[in-house]
Image 1 (cartoon, rainbow over the protein chains, first blue to last red):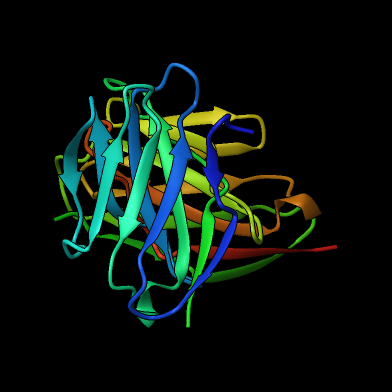
Image 2: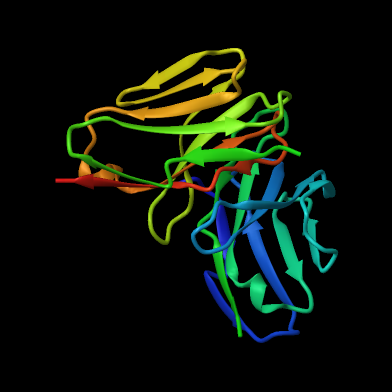
Length: 112
Length: 111
C-alpha cells in the first residue's frame, strides 16, 4: 500500500448538497493532486495543491474547490452537487520535484 | 492540452502468453509516462514508469518502451498470470504536473 489515506470510503448525497472529502498524503510528500474517476473511465485531473496553494487546475467548474493544510493533508469540497458528480474521487500524493504520484483508495460518491 | 489514446480497450490472452497495450500522446512537452494497474474497487497502483530520456525500461515480467518521435509508448507483460487480470491505464505528464490518463485496457488472463 502507498500510505495515502482518504475518508470517507463511501458517501451518499442528494442533488444540491455539499460534500467534503479528505486526503492524508504519504509521509514526506508535500504535493496532493485530486482526480475524478467516473465508472469505466480513466481518472480526470481536478487540481493540485502545493504549499497550501492551488498549483494547476483541470476542466472543472468553480464549485469544485480545495484546501491544503500545513501538514500537507488536503480537502476537496464540491458544492451544489449534480447527478454527474457521482464518481470515485482519488487523491494522489507526491514530492515536489519528483514525478511519481501515489494514489489513495478513493472515496466513492453517489449523488441521488 | 494533452490527449492520451489507449488501445485496445479489452484484451484477453492465454495464461503464459504476452500482452501488449499501446498508448499515444499529443503534447511533445510530456516527459513522464507511468502505467497504473487498477483492480476492481481498488486504487490505481503504479507498476512501472519511464521518462523521456530513456527508450525502454524493464522490471521482471513488465517492460515499457517509449518512442518520442512517434509519441507513443507501450506496456509489455510477459508470461502472464491470472493475477495480471485488471484494468491498466497509461498516463502522460510534464514533470509532476497533472497526469492525463488513457481510457484504460481491461486485461483478462484465461487460465
